[in-house]
Image (cartoon, rainbow, N blue to C red; front, side, top):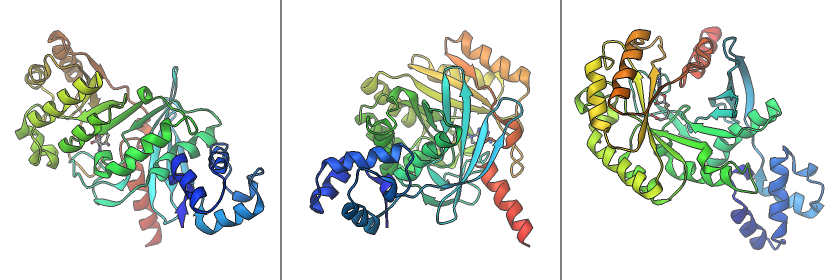
Length: 347
Ligand code: SAH
């Protein structure tokens, strides 16, 4: 059965036409979804005959909240969500003064293979559909009873490796009839799938593009990110320039600092040189240590030094405030540790 959450208003209007129903019903039905109605029978203004037809063709499928973990440090909440096929994903809610922000997953697992990342260890299980990605926000919003105003696609999965579903998700999440979140409040993070960056740029969206760079040379990048074997940093930067020209939006470069791997002042200088003149922002992330990897986080001093070198070179830089470090908030950590404990429990 089709999940109604995967439908745009246009598609539902089309379905109405094909099924000899009035088009205006589509809008009524969709607005029930955003009021949190999960059963067609509760859609009070919809005639019974149409409800039966809908029930034959669609389901309204939300993930269940399997667990919620709340950080004692900063109130960040991590949601472990379970889809009807049993697959688990995680979404993280961060509360800021300027509003609630959610970090969502786009795939179950990931096949990009970054060495420091927990999401990728068992590869990609499957893509999430547009409606499933959207439902992460709906479920969390419903749970907290507050609006979510910012969305970052930085959870598990590579958004540009699930391009069509992610583009449809962007349409749904920004739609006036939907959550009506402004494009400026959305950030998409990618490890750098170059052809898809061009495609995204051509869509002329006002979203923020974030690139997981993590190294200043291809040689170093290859050590930690297999995607570097496919696309060079120069190719990524060229695609970023294209994105900036098209959208006039500042690109963010994420740089996870790993002790002894990419965190010296020389590394910082080289990075600064590389990015000079580009409309960009560097986000330094002290790497979250995962037990499957030997990577250790850089010391506070080297993070500060790294940041100072970039600033001196005229690069806009921030050090990511750590959120939820006590609740396994790094990509894919929670799902993994949860699956592992379930396995141990079952043995
Ligand atoms: N696949 C996309 C989005 C998901 S990862 C991407 O690569 O951008 C979101 C960000 O978290 C990326 O910058 C990723 O490199 C980073 N990340 C993953 N594991 C991490 C860890 N253990 N510590 C710090 N950052 C991590």
